[in-house]
Picture (cartoon, one colour):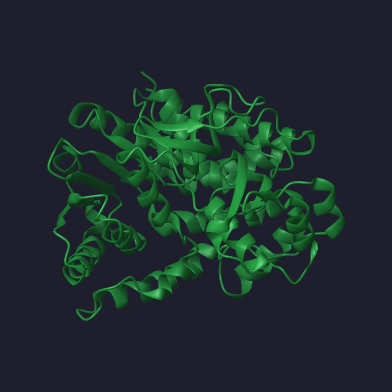
Length: 444
């Protein structure tokens, strides 16, 4: 056994990184991180430096012997890594703003991971993650890849399908946020609540809910039917559900389901917000500026509470828990994105799903849930088709495949509108989509 663990974080200049640092500090007694490499690209150098200095101050204050290395040379960082975490955004928040604004012109939801925005984030991200996978194969073939770059489900799907990496887990904060929201609504400690999660990333359902081992699904559904209990996330408008709809659904939806079950209301809210205070990306750009001003202070040596406004609360804590459980073979239950292997009967075995897993030293073992309830099964299958076709488009750079992906997404009303949005977004993102503008494809 090596003396301590080497962790590489690609996208180390992210505003979320202090939460990751805090997670490693809090678990140091059982997760002995010796080296933490924060990696970014040339354009992110300044942010990487600010985050790196804050990380060093946090570690010094905690008195733990973690060495922090900063680099823009990914290959230098990856040599002999034990875990590689990915949290990057190709094209930065400017690209996200385009993903949100352009669809709105066509009266279609503009959102980071859903609809046209989710497609384009995947098209930009997947070629980059597959290059990272090649480097991992060569430089640290035994490392675990823990991805929380969005769209996490589509990215995990692409890694499973188009790379040789088997040790990959996709991660999202939505299930944890749901469990925390339920605990808050019930006024109980979160560790007393267990949720049976199954579905896809940003399309996950709570099939059952337990308090101290007793099913309380009906009680939670009634709580969600009460307009006073607004369970959502910082980056999603908390529009209340129709009480009879929630009772009829019979399972717990996540915040992102509002885009599918309340499309017209969410679109109206987005259009109004975009006009008044900007799209979510434009709001986050202001938040980021404030956060990095805070991070610069030589007196700051903790994760500032303002970080929770970013909408990614619990992300990094989830990553640290997952790494800890793999390293220590904890065999606890965590919801992650992994190969289905028959856990959800209505999804292909080789596809990525988001489901509760037993986390072992050999990675996640999905807990079988059988078939999804018929009321939600079709929507989940449609989104899985979208993810599969989108991942293929990202790898091949094939225009027709991209148009097919855009059109089969339930948030896009027709192939004509899909083509209009696709053409405008391809033009807007030309710099980050070389596969669509060159003859040779990336698929070897």
